[in-house]
Image (cartoon, rainbow, N blue to C red; front, side, top):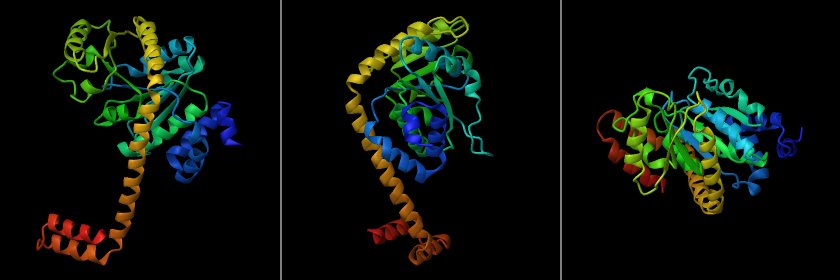
Length: 304
């Protein structure tokens, strides 16, 4: 099986195999990315985030169908909280998105593995694989747990933040980070009580910001606002294509720094494991004859 050739033809089995490689096989992944890297960075990526229970999976399902009707070839990467036992993705997003796969959308769940650095590395390379297979735009769903949703905004071109009046979301409880990253804010499940108040307060609070994001209402239950949301995404996708090169350059800068810092961290960690000097200073800290700051400074000086 010529993986690169099959990817270029958009074969689903090849895509699945390539993304598994990116998640689990560092050497295979490096070899693959080397072959496809040159043509990467052209598809527009859309991050869709917000608290759990906001109805993101069903929303993405419906929206990707509408995007495909507009002539796009959509893919979805769903980043799930990790199962601590198996290390695998535990949410059945693909079960909830069967309609959109029938319309040509490619859907893949990825485990977050509890490490934001690992997420962004596997995610960046999975995006490259989907791009090479001809998908554009690529939707990235993150479950709003901890820091992940804010990190997602660094990897994608556009960020959509989804709220839901039922989860007790109001301006007081919305995390500060979420109010800064969105290009579109959606009040989903807008058929529920409290949706209008939430819409007004989000618009008043966030709509006035420098970024001037769009605030919209959707309901997957009645299909209200989905077509309008897809059209708005289409407009933003086209406008982002114009500034894509600049964004890609700053993203590659961040990626290269991540890789170098990770390499240095691993190198230093291995060095400390076998260092008699480190062991000597560690003993002093453990015996409380030296504080950790001074010990750290002394060891760091020796590393220069």
